[in-house]
Image 1 (cartoon, rainbow, N blue to C red):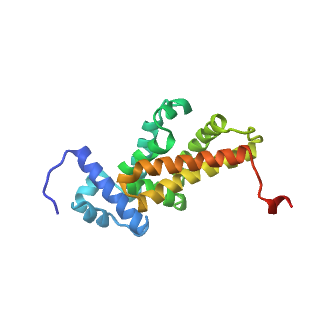
Image 2 (image 1 turned 90 degrees about the vertical axis):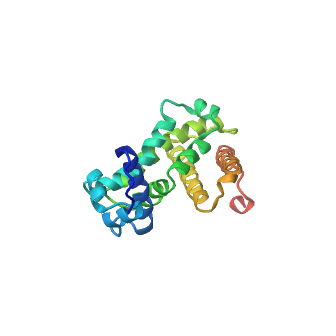
Image 3 (image 1 turned 90 degrees about the horizontal axis):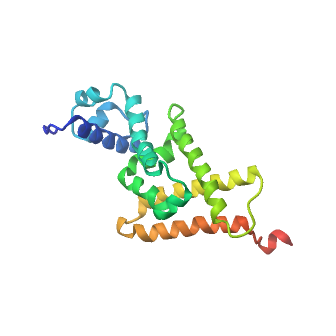
Length: 205
């Protein structure tokens, strides 16, 4: 175990990062506070000094990603986001800072009844933002009807989050710029296809 004395905020961040990796590997039920302490290189007592329960620690892991996302998108509209390069690079910035927490939030939290609200809340926020993206990005006819618009926005969000998580798994950070272009083009292509659909022959014959 490390004998290095860190300020409390730095120690907390260290434990949260280690816990994200442990929870991602073993799941919530399969991870103990001892596992987290081992991953962080500290004693279990140190972990309990900062987090009283495993539930509190798991919440802190998810919050490390959601708080950062909220900070990146606070007080920004679709045009401000465009000026910063679009939603994909902003999302990737957060994902690179908290890779395991980001994966945990979008891939696993939904399956933990106590924590599903974290990912569901942000999916809903992103879906609302996606509807604004659709409004300003569609090149064909508007996508009419609340059900269809909501479906389109939801699919865009899932495509975005799934794409970023998959890139964290396999992508080289040196190629992040190419990934951002590819995923952005893919999202815009989906919007274009939905706003001006050209069904294949086997659907119209």
